Image 1: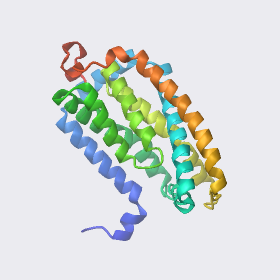
Image 2: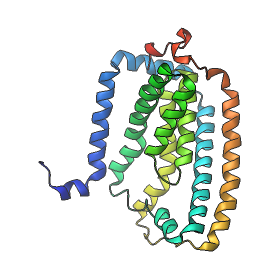
Image 3: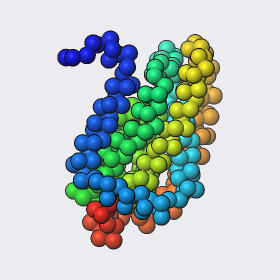
Image 4: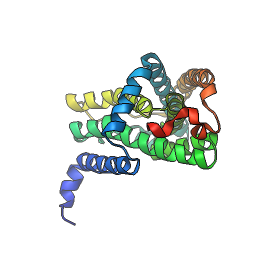
Length: 254
């Protein structure tokens, strides 16, 4: 009503940052977050953080996302090459404002999405049904939000962060994984944007389909092996009534 539409279109990322942080403040209010709770979260986080495990989880998720992207792109190449090229080039013009898009992708999105999908959806669905249903539904919804070539990787990413949330009982751990993941996968885009690289990407052909399918399958299998190892290692934390178990003390933190 009050802002010129062209201004909004030219500053879409900046507007989205404002919207995201407004929603984050709203969630803070609804969840009763205050300075004392934040300080307790940070102190607990510093005691529990396992850098090696965080790096392992991020590496696994990037491998799975890369593998599924190649697989889906290869399948689409076989079906419709024009659609494949369209999807392959879809993200090139997204980052029109490097600073705003960096804040949006690497800072506000991980905070907002972890609060909403893990603290709100995962926890509440789990209390109403059980942890398994909560994990499945919240991760599927998280994947739908990331409706793109790496959607399967996004769903698995949701599962991994649910497990980390159950294990450490501190939302800052999944947030750290989310921060690092988004930062690493965004680097190529930001570098290409800064360097003024040409937007004319090499077009895919039908002959690329087989290579994409084979490489994608290999990478995806490697990623899933790593992910299954992660689940097996942490299976003792995935209890159906975890959020009702007093030993978890979720309500004391976040």
